[in-house]
Image (cartoon, rainbow, N blue to C red; front, side):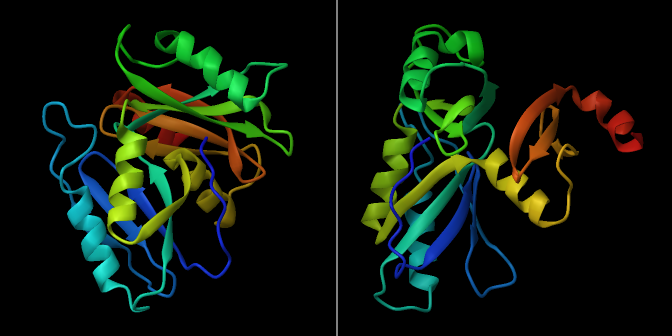
Length: 213
């Protein structure tokens, strides 16, 4: 998965970005800020409202002209995530393998233009990999909108990674799972050392049995 260097003196703002909403978490503020986003139009990789939302976010920061960096977590619908076992290859090779056979791993149609971002496990960034697929142009559109509004993108990751870290910080033990209720499914995310270890997808109808488990 794309990772860029963060300069320590640059304040970091976390945003969760979906197809219909941007949520920003700003250091020192208790409540997140939210902006609704119109859906992308024909031929658009991302919502036309993204630039305006980032501009409003930048204008509302209290640090004047100080440069800010963004840690961007991509939500389901905007990005699909899979855990992939590809022993013996690094993250770059894994991305190439996934790109050649994307429809085998992700719900994308053959021939559909897309981008793949991959994050490995451990210091050597090896298998198992967290891989996300987005429509072609989404990652570039985020970087361009950020730069146009005075931000640099320091990190792009799956929302699952952010959820796993938050659950671990909240006391969820290694090996345990947290249930995420999405619009069309329930997902059980198993944790290990504050990271995603496995993901199990269930139909929405299974939510009641998950809650009782």
